[in-house]
Each structure stands twice: as C-alpha cells, then as structure tokens.
Image 1: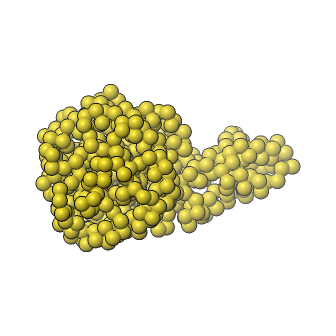
Image 2: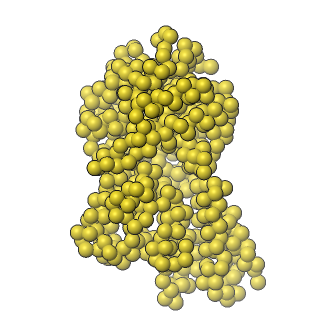
Image 3: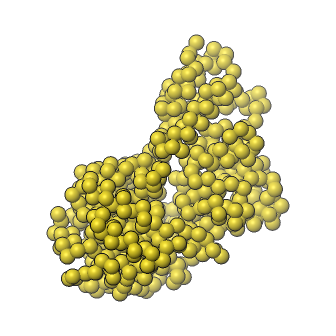
Length: 213
Length: 293
C-alpha cells in the first residue's frame, strides 16, 4: 500500500514519474480515484499556487508541477469518464485574433487541466467565431482569452460583443489575462474575471464554476 | 571591453532609441500586423522611424527586426524571408543613421518555451544564427538580444550571435515576482548578469516589463554583478486602452526625471521600450548630454 502523501509530494516537487507510479499503485490497490484527486492532487496544486503567489515558485516550477499532476491525471481521467464523472468545467482557451503569443496561454491551459478542468485549447489567433462555435458545439462554459500586445487587446472586447450578438454571452464566464491586461480593462469590456497570472486563473475558473477556490 | 563599446561609453552615457511598433502603427501598421515585414512592404515608413530617432538624438538606433527569426516568421507564413527582412532592416536603419548614429540590430525572443519542449536548443541556435549572420552581413555595428524572458534561451542566442564576431548586447525582462525583479522564469538580475557575462555578452541589460522607476534598483544590481557596461530601456509606465488605442501613463518629462538616478545606478546605454517615442529620446539626450559624438 503506497504512502499517498508521496503523491502530494511528487506533484509539489514536479516529479512526474513518481506521481505516475504512486497513482498506478494506489489505483491497483483499489483506492478511489476521486479521493486521490481531492485529498492529494488538488491540495498539492493549491500549494504550488500558494508558493507561486509568494514568489517562491516561478514558471518553471509551475510547469513541472503541472506536468506531474497531469501524469497522474492521465491514469485517473479514463476511470472518472467511464463512471460518468464530469470535469469541474469545460474551458475554451485561446490567444485572441491577431496575436500569436502562446506561452502564457499554454501555462494557463496546463494549470487548468491540473485543476480538474477539461480544456479545449484553440491555439493562437483565435477569431470570435471560433470561440462561439466552441461554446455551441462543445458546450464550453468558460472562455479564457489571452493577449500579449496592447494592439491585440481590443480583440477581447470584440469577442465579448460577438458572444452577445450570438446570444451565448450568458452561457459562459469570460476570463482574460496577459501582460498588458488589467482589472480595469476587464471591467471596462465586461469580462467576468481577470488574473495577473496562471495560478489566479485557476482560482477564477473554480469560482466561476461555483466550487471552493 | 570591445573597442566599439569602449569608444561609445567613454564619452558618457549613450542615448539609444525608443519604441518602434507604436511608431509604425502611427504610420499605418495595422493591429496584429507583423512589423518586421514592413522592411519589405513599407521601407520608407521604417526608414522614417529610424530617422526620427536619429534626429531626436539617439547615438545608437536599433532595427525593425525584433521578430525576424525563422520560428516567428513561420507563424506568419514567411520562414524563407529571414535573410531579406533582416538585411533590409539594417540597410534602412543605416540609411537613416547616415553616419550620425550606430546601428545595433535587434533580435527578440523565439516565443517558444524550451522547458515545455516546444522547441529544442538546436532549433533555437540554428534560427538565431541564421538571423545574426544576416544582420552582420548587412553591416550592423552590433547585435542587441532583447526582451528575453528565459535565461536558457538568452544564453543560446548570445552564443549564436557571437559567431558573427560583432559586439553583443544581451538584455532580459524583469517583471515577475513580488518585487518585479525576476524574469518570468524566476531568474534574478544577479543570475542573469553572471550567466550572460560568462556566455560572452559585451553589454548586459534589462528592457521592457515595467516603467522606469523599477529599473533603478535592477540597474544597480546588474552593475554590481558584472564588469560589462549596462543597457537599460524601460517602458513608459503601464498602458491603458482608451477607445481602442493604447495610452501609456508616463510622459517624456516624467520618464526623463528618473534618468539621472539611472545614470547614477550605472546605466551606460539608456533608451525606452514600449510606449516611448522620439520625444522621450530627446528628453533622455537632454538630461544625459553629450560631450562629444
């Protein structure tokens, strides 16, 4: 019987192999996958987030911890899907039209997956139409938009307007982020949330789905 | 010290240039349009921006080649245009400088993260060696590796750039952490200065990421961690978007008020990044003064 605290520890230190091995062993012993997720994995990512917020961890640590989380989730997700468990939420994420920068967007996508969300990564240079069709066809309930340039920020406003025109604005929560983005801008364009970093994005997404942050 | 760099800094702090993207936008560059391609499609406008900085007093101007590596050009469908875009970029700046300013060619990041496996060290080296050689071949006086967010990538680019034999400026963005004194990847000014000095950069610095106030301390820390001259290019504060246009909070005067502190902190190449313009450069030049050109 593996020591499950090792799963928490493996994620915290970004050890994907150990996270995978402990999860494998635990599942083989019949441990409930949801227990692993809720008692060890999510608390580990929450701690990663806390350390990032107080500048102990930076992007590299976030990345390797998210990777460790995902290597464990890989084993768990099929089991949850098979028994009809739903993800915390379904997020359509993309860098807005005209903008090709994706490092931040990829980081947020990674952490959202680690946080138990289903993530539909639309890539870069994403048109409002693509966001809309993802809402309609894939039932995304969160739209996450990223922009790195002040010149592409306006596409966030355009996208929100397009969501309204298409009659889907109230079906989703819209979260935005990126280097030039501010809370003020988020308020101005009617976004539901803004975070200055990837860790905050996960907290916002959880709040948006009415789970404990 | 590299003789060119020596000759530039011995007469006092050198005024470099300001933002190019916003200057090109003022001349019609569309939202989301890739600025570097204007070297081919709108050369006169590019030359005008360079000329405006020379006229404002820049002793060193850069080139419109920030994104002109094959990785980023592939994203806009033009991976084969690397040599031409870089060459034209140097030519246009050189035309505009006309002997009154040095041309330090700009090399920006790949936009891919090494740590995430989006790219390999070999691919990075090849792309930046290609760009550096094109810039050197066109007659650039030096290479400026700027706005780097990952020290691992920066080291690779410095190595590629040094193959040309030109002096190399290497600068990073420090905008993360509680004190906004770390790179996105968590590296400190001390770590950056040490690694970049070891990699052979001739000038070391910081640009972008925040307004000028935060750069005083970063400059001091870089200065203390290396014997290379220090290159600083802050933003004009933080932008807000008003009626679809980005507006920056600091005026040229407000920016220039910090320049004496920056000089005291050890900055030897001073210019501006996002949100700055020829007015900022004129103010920097006025404050810094120049005993001899």
